[in-house]
Picture 1 (cartoon, each protein chain N blue to C red):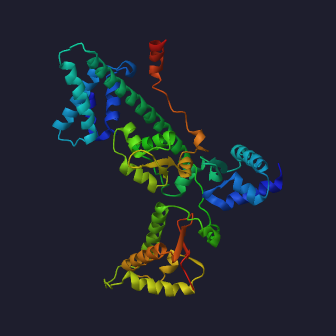
Picture 2: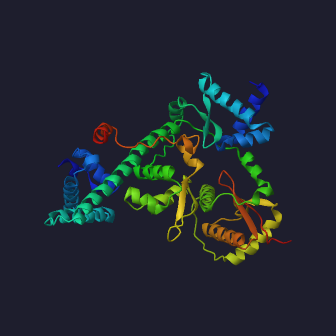
Picture 3: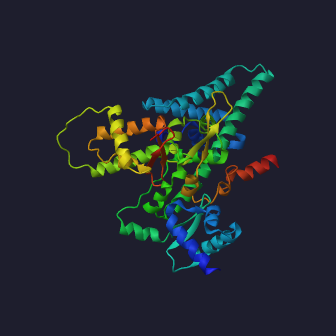
Length: 247
Length: 184
């Protein structure tokens, strides 16, 4: 069977697989023969299982539902209304979910085209001097950005650090505690102005572990309110004196 | 068209770069009423688009005006540089983004109900790429986060605003005829 040539990891999930089966068997979603779809789905999962492919739990959850549907159909009909509504409801619910998912699957194609179109147009990053105007201390009152901005900014600093890094030399590990580093940093801050960047604080750093201790120390000072932080649009981490910063 | 206003706006747009600027902020900086600035911007959008001598055009994504190179520059730039970065999205990412965009604010569980697969990792990836954001918590048990798309999302898909989302298809077109018969 054709559909078995498509490996399970090519599908986005059970809904995607079911839509594929519906299309392939040319089933009508609005008058869905759930018996056919269930048979196809069960056969497909079995085939994948025989090929020793890993089948995600989501597929098995849907499989269980379809198996239940199938087994109820096999039971002798006692013509009770309950039985009938179960079949209708299961079918109706599944159809609704398939229709809903189908809409998003199709609109995501439009999004793909929109993005491809967008990628043909390129823009210019802001000049650093302009982003630097953000140094205005008034901007520090409202913390811009979120944790992810900070991670992005942090990655950029590490990237730069990697570029600056000379060729590897002998490893000499020196233990440096956050407390020690905080003392050094506070002393260094006296020389720096009201606002400075994380890079400024890392000026004397030569090793990755020193760099990490510096970052942790800065985070600790932010937490205690000694420093305030904001990220610029170009991922620069700007630091300033915090609320508890006396002297 | 007021030439001085034209040059002021052009200069500011050049300076703001890929960040772009909203009509509101631009008007405040120029100390001019918003409709005046909006009118000038609209005019400039058309002018840049229609002027064959220009390699850049003025666009508005997520409410922000900015300059971008015209599409015809792309093949030239590709030759000039060995490679232009092409960050395309996986089908899973596009589906998740689409669901969030149309259903926002929406919880992770609601997204998973539609996609029938776990979306935890995908949501984290989209958060890290700044395409979606947390916009509060739902009243559902466990107070799960609610997600919505960001301006970055609008920029990525060339959308001026969230109102400009393409129309969500109702159902498969080839079945439209069938369904009409069914209900007709």
